Image 1 (tube, helix red, strand yellow):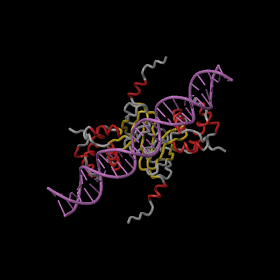
Image 2 (cartoon, chains in turn yellow, brown, cyan, red):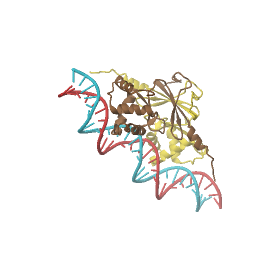
Image 3 (cartoon, chains in turn brown, green, blue, cyan):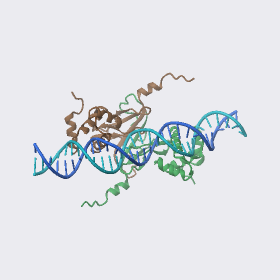
Length: 151
Length: 151
DNA sequence: CCGCAAAACTTGACTGGTTCAAGAAAAGTG
DNA sequence: CACTTTTCTTGAACCAGTCAAGTTTTGCGG
């Protein structure tokens, strides 16, 4: 049983976006689905478990194409490499750990398009408001809270 | 007449943060003040108009130290290099141009700590909510709107 | 079922912002 | 003014991401 999107769905997604259906692309979509918020390096590794011969360049190209087509979403928190997640309709945001860079999804408290209307937009035609929460993840907090034996 | 922060103020800022007062540091602070949202390269150039002999490494170190001390704020919109601005108390955000990368300040519509409380924080100890608005700046919009003569 | 043009992938070199390391030069302290 | 620590200089290395040229596939039309 498949949890989220099935093989066939990915194929339809690609065709719907006028993108040819290829092995690398299906593998990348599957990898992104299985490893949300993974960076390019991890995705490359993940993809190679299915298609050992893919070039790193192919993965870059595919991720670029999928991002342009809106099938996946690219996020780049300061200090991290590019990370990817399957595009879901809801406008959710992310919490990023200051010490280890871990990322988790969050729905904004203000459900509907949070703060989309800026006070003074300086003439910019704004089409998206991206919210990044910064903090410390449970794991890192636990580590930092260890009995500190300063000599 | 000096608009914002004066020479002496910068020196006090540094001492207050337990940082030694050096020529490169004062020059970097001045450069950041004069060129808000400038990337490292531009700042290096700006600093060298005052202190021609600074190494690029010094600028990196200084920016790092000032950022750690909280005297300047580093922002890294996806697709841009690191950019810096003088730290101001207000919790303001940024609009970034999708085509040229230009950055401008914006006060969030929800004046006070916008969306700081996430619905489900996944156990993270959140201390900041960073909002990035994405759009197209006036200049780029004008260029894109030129009479398009497709043949 | 076969061949063709466009789109995708492979290979391999390269770029450029950022970082590392070791020594010289200042800043602050008593 | 000598001393310790921090900071700056020099120069090399790193590495995610990009470029370019050539080969392979895909999807389509005959």
